[in-house]
Length: 353
Image (cartoon, rainbow, N blue to C red; front, side, top):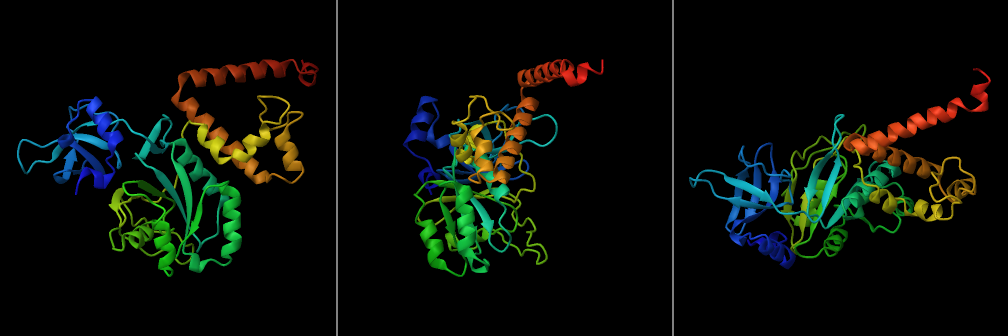
């Protein structure tokens, strides 16, 4: 095994050389536990840790290329000394009231949004996952698993494609190996693909099918609601025949978006395009005169539930920005005070004074 087997390329080599990093001290994080990281180096798989005085920032995640060094004793774990700058990252809004983001994976080339066809399709969930991928600068694809269990595969494919807006959509089944192999043929050696989706959709099973081995733990889903049992408990990178790398992730019950609006522009490209015809450049598509987006809803060319989802995710991104940025909080407070002052001078309220 060499670094190239885990995604190392000329760009990484040039970046390392510019920073004075020796190849022998480079490893890629392929697994993460609470306080230790599994790293693949030219000399093999090494367990590494963060020394308490290291001050390494950002904290390593699966997919990172890191600078490591052996411990003083052969039996000691290695130490992570630095994280090479990331090309891309998959992150969500951190839980709690403090804002910020939680990075789930890094240096990903493609995101597979996995949905099981043994359960009803949820378009709003797909929009949220697509926005998450685009926010990180990674192109998503939609993988529909358990195609043999679909009640109406063609109808579901059409519904997904309408939401995906040109994003590739694939359907696979464990009962049809040819479809699985065709999906694997779309990957290039050394590329990293992150699988995202809730528990029970078949992410780990798909990894095993593509790897042609039981490399990822799988479990049954509950018959009454088709929900999984969180068999996958850690993020882990697996190699598959052909040289691509699959990053399996635990299912997420909560998926907060970060502060970036780029993902919204990509996911809702249809609304963005229609909005260019609005009378006002800063139209919010709520009640403004000459709003092309509202006219599209009235004419039946835009699904009102899709517009509602767009507004909801916009509001969520703005909320995350206010939590993370003091200047954004101050601007929002100023706008709120201005609105109150304007409201006080409205004829409806002046008559009550």
